[in-house]
Length: 322
Image 1 (cartoon, helix red, strand yellow):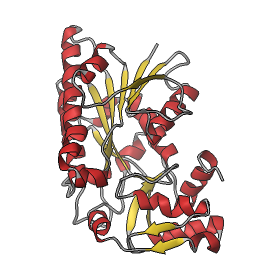
Image 2: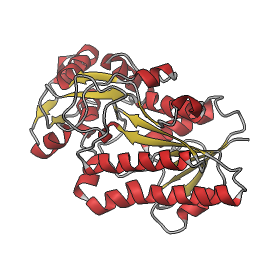
Image 3: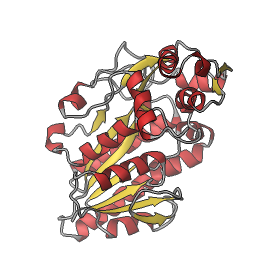
């Protein structure tokens, strides 16, 4: 029986992942899934729900002593909030990860070095900072220009080092911006990328805070869930100790997003997008990557959508409720 722990299991991606784990045969029909988060939606995916705060004393140790075989670490303070609440961002996005890694190290040593869990960490393309090449390759330097990006990059380095020492078997996935996210907007600076599609499809007005020329890197929540489960079963020897991977996705401008919306829902939906420039969001977004060449991930079997039209179609199939 495979024991699986999803930290951040109550969030959008955690729920997508839990549903995929429960409906796929990746980990076997008898997989035991535990979900940890501050709260859970009423229609939560199946699993043992644990409510708590990741920064609370003793939480990391309680995870480790259960000896889960696979740990998905998705919990984070999102980009916009990490920028405005500096201390909270570092406490949640880095120090809680440090505590988790040390607890797993202690359990590894207590087991006579037999317990070595697979840890899949949800990192971000925010680990990269400008100036950018035309396409970011697998060799491009990680040099973030936001607090959120710095926190994710630091966590990646810790996971690589703990893996090198044999305490864990870790993989960090640099996820594209997930779009179209279901539900309400969150505090992420990238939230508008989903909002300008989701709200008009529901007949509501959406605010666009940046220019239509802004280009960004996207994948659907469905693709992200498949990235995570694929990483959990990946032969990490193939990584050659480079344990952070850029995930595949779709590069498009805001104008191309809007055109895809027009293709699906017509001009009436597009007319619900209101332009309202926001200098703060513009300043954050300008330091984000725009396009990638993800040869390593593709060779390892990771797959995403091929167009933004496809991404909207995934939203319509998985999450759209008129």
